[in-house]
Length: 245
Image 1 (cartoon, helix red, strand yellow):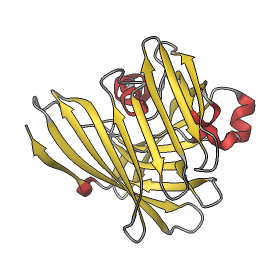
Image 2 (image 1 turned 120 degrees about the vertical axis):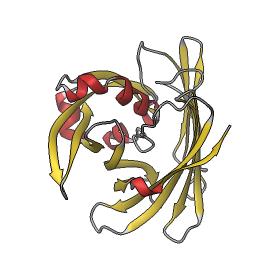
Image 3 (image 1 turned 90 degrees about the vertical axis):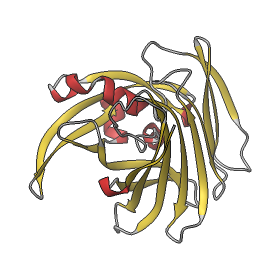
Image 4 (image 1 turned 90 degrees about the horizontal axis):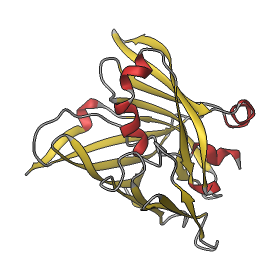
């Protein structure tokens, strides 16, 4: 059950400068199995930003053969840190979603098409984070994180229908291939949860909150319903403008 503590989607994190008008960009992440290094799937983010702020993101997931098997839609307009989202994996039947209801947040989760859909409406804690809202949290707290000031927030765990305290901190600055990067760790604030669940490792660009590598538990699942352990790489070359308003 503790694996579900890390089903939070850190996968769609990125940063783009304020460019004044509505812009659609496409960004691709390549997910490799941590044990074998084999490519498992790709995720393509179609993000719409207006006046430099993200409005929505449509994420399509394709297997190594290019077959579409999952789609996630994110609407940031109600709450940038806890956006509305809906994920459907047609291969496993796994679904999860979150929706703002004023000062509350409705969560739905199902492991498969054969399982019942669980639903719960939760009080929405101040500055709570859900799904891809993590991206906006990193951007808003970037100065504190790089100044070695840990940030603690309540994160939604859809599979557990609840929020849990997590902490985010800079673990190190690394040099690789002549380029500096910041390694940021995300882990449960509770010591015993950390022992059971481990740490998610994120590699960001040194001078801006642009995600380069995600390493940890994916929101995608295998045939047995277990979350995949992955390393997701986001090459700069696969970020591009699709259209401008």
